Length: 103
Image (cartoon, rainbow, N blue to C red):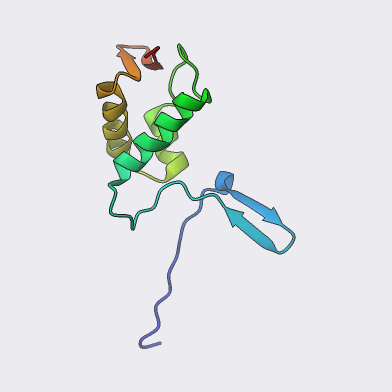
């Protein structure tokens, strides 16, 4: 059909809750925002650290897991973690992973 646009939005099933005929979606990353996506993810992870959802001394989820959960490229996740490292919130232990540290 000429002039018709079909928009497809991929939603991670983990971020979706069905209530009767309504489906609620928890959107974490806004790809249309003027804020870069890696900064949005860094903000989300920072809040998880501050709230205690990611505890001091525990490993961060892997870059692959975060990329899949938020629908992002691994490079974007790595850049977000770099921001947290610069802020002193996480530390990389070679061969072990990225860990939340006491600030």
